[in-house]
Image (cartoon, rainbow, N blue to C red; front, top):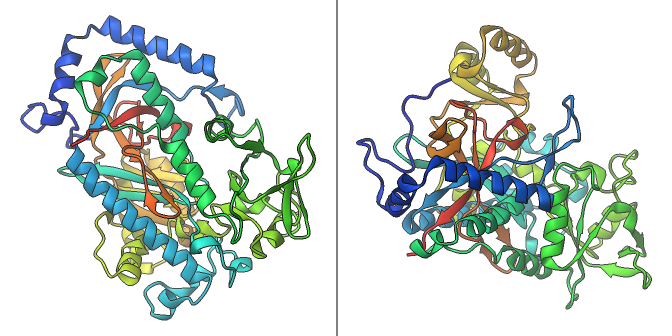
Length: 473
């Protein structure tokens, strides 16, 4: 699929380099491709050496470690654009946290009729065990990864919210380190806002949501183990924050308190940054066959003796069937107009929407409401007639499982590929932290669809990453 009309991050419609890219464009034009290829090979070798990998499941080589391809041409965002983006992100995450608290307590937004009650309370991610449970600072999504795309004439849209176990921040940090190592002189030409404060900000955020009365909280990162696709990130963040990396078997619950086993004996745990889905956290409360969780963890959590980041039940707010209502959440809870807009979305559970989607499958992107990682979706313009017809049958059988959106002409950024420097489509995942305040480092993880014409940026689907430069004013 070839997108003919898209926003070019570096050049305007007349082919003139945009002001914030001018210095970099001059540098790039003077750089021989052989030198760029050498630097890319150097980056790959360093990533391999440092074990910066991920694993893909469900394929022939399931579980094998891979590099996420790193592109050495950065994505650059001017200060004024970032200022607007950051304000919109803070606003959106505030509203989402208020929504999650509300649906587990008073349910005012449901009573007011702004969101269909059954769509929330019957949602697969809604956890009835969290009804009436008070959490520290009334915050549920302490770490949010919000996917931003740019389309049309350069407008930014929120594509989706990730509030369960958002990943990718380690690659944001490692990409910056790599760029500074490969091209140190470039950073003297640009005033690029730093991102290296993120681990300190994350630790401060986690400590700030410790249970009431805990003044010096013990924080841990909870991982499913070394075979998880994002294990590198789990270990990386624990190391960067200076906290323990633990698995479920390393902890136990006694008298509604959580302890981890150490060589000096049991140590109380106050905050768990968990990278495990709800279903696997506690075999006594959720999936009894889970060997990844801690028996009794839910009871300790409900008793207010430990904080889980993110909270159990947060996933209902990042479900794609709830996504269309986020602008209304901003208006309802904050009394403000949304700064960032959603992509127009058709809810296939609605008969009128379903009819429209079925008539226009070849032009739309259809997604599973619980899907992630680029799986379970149809990109109409890039699909064969046979693929569309097969998807049509699934959609007709289970329309409530899907939403549909127009095929956006994602913005493109120059990317160093096998054929040389060429435009490739990108998105952006900034990471928003909610504790004493709502904050984020300037930038995020830029993901790039390396295949020509592709709009799928997920690493599991062959996408790569770029360093994201936010310029200081």
